[in-house]
Amino acid sequence: MTNLLTGAAGFIGFHVARRLLDQGERVVGVDNLSPYYSVSLKEDRLRQLLQHPNFTFHQVNIADRGAMQEAVGGLKISSIIHLAAQAGVRYSLENPFAYIEANVVGHMVVLELARQQAALEHLVYASSSSVYGGNTKFPFSEDDRVDQPVSLYAATKKADELLSQSYAHLYGIPQTGLRFFTVYGPWGRPDMALWLFTEAILTGRAIKVFNNGDMRRDFTYVDDIVTGILAARDNPPARKDSGQGGEAGGGAPHRVYNIGNNHPEQLLRLIEVLEDALGCKAERILLPMQPGDVKQTYADLTAVERDLGFKPTTVIEQGVPQFTAWYRDYYNL
Image (cartoon, rainbow, N blue to C red; front, side, top):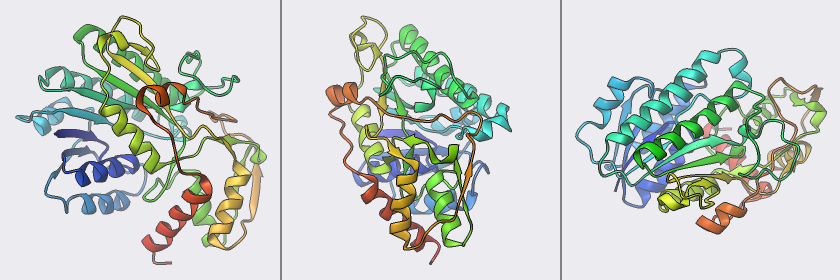
């Protein structure tokens, strides 16, 4: 099977590529190596992937229609796993156009590529738990309203879901959107809390704890996320399966699922687990909530467990030490 994987040099994309390659599949990776965070980290991920003979890479901006067409020219793509995006809630306040280009225009380009692939079986794409905005009903269900985003990032991810729904309806392209909940693990992103806390603690700096630590997140280990992505890929929706969480709607072959841990952890508990893993205490600076952030995320996994058999297995007491062990090894600490 030939898989087109966008965001192949990214955190989740790297882990998906490794799993696919270990299974003997072919992966055509696309990434623009954006400088949003360390390009050298992305290059280090790529160096590992390029050791596999079944991996090819194209440094391409997904919003560049011509370059994307050239990257897949002549290939018979069986599946597209579309993970490339401009990530981060807070950065969207500084550079909003980066989100429109990557997340909306880029998604549209991928949809058009999918429409031209006669052999395509399924398009799986990354959405986000951010679409739930300031919802106060917990856990978040795919049936909840998601039309009141509190960040531009969330708005672009909801726009992706709507674009995919329309293309599934118009052209019958089987698609599944996955709403990820706070992914962490080895080879992670330097802009995320676990990495920032680890870096600060090991260099003797204080950590910034927003909303005075009164936050809960459905921290999800990256290996569990990859398992969910591939379970989705292997189960494309039929036309009758249209809807949120696989509910039959008699319409387009498009589904949206939560992929999380179904166990929100207090931010202060994450810090305690991290301190134990590192063997040292953190100095904490308590700060108010940041614009665009939400107090709590909590995934209802009823639909994805029912339809795809997805059940996360990694708690933070296991996952955080695996991240810190990787971090120390990566930086020779």
